[in-house]
Image (cartoon, rainbow, N blue to C red; front, side):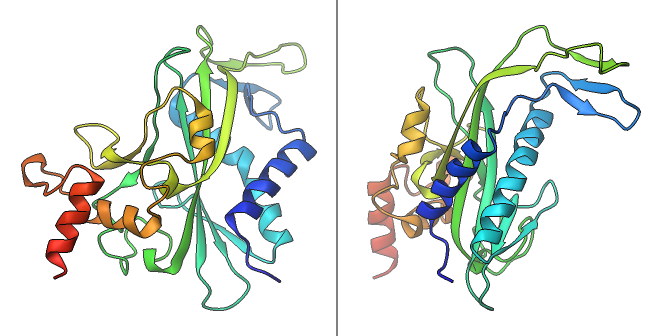
Length: 251
């Protein structure tokens, strides 16, 4: 069986999304006591909902292609690891990312993990399921939604007689290779998180039109692996400056 490629994964993800008519909107959690526990607009909970809804699609795609799937604990990268059938083959990291619209026209971005953790040491296992060097590909399933104002956390005692509103709406998603949506700047000024490039159109992320798209994954990794968290100590702030810096350090 051939190794799964990004093109195959993205195509099959969309096919299964349509086949099962997946509805990304969830109103709450259904308890064994028959109650519905509405969760409100908590972003962490909504992110977990999207990850949970993706899980059966990812598992089925893996099974169709002879891979196995290993999920990670909440703070461990990635959300899903696809393990190839051949022993010693490179694994695939799949991470689910979520953000919401501030307005219809405002730009948005995603946080894509820290640049000071396992990226600095490909052999390390801290905060990652397997050492970074064991992953050949890193793919993102990203969700964008709007908050539905006024929907709060609440317990509905009789689920058969109530209709709990979903606390979010207008869900859109994309599936893309991580390096193709990675920006040259952190997600915010006071963190060590890598950011995706800013846009107000999710189609830009679907197209993977980031600054590293043409340069490739290795160039993206190299840029962030050597990026200093102290602004005054950064030897570069653009790709061009990074290439010059690397050239001077490899001679």
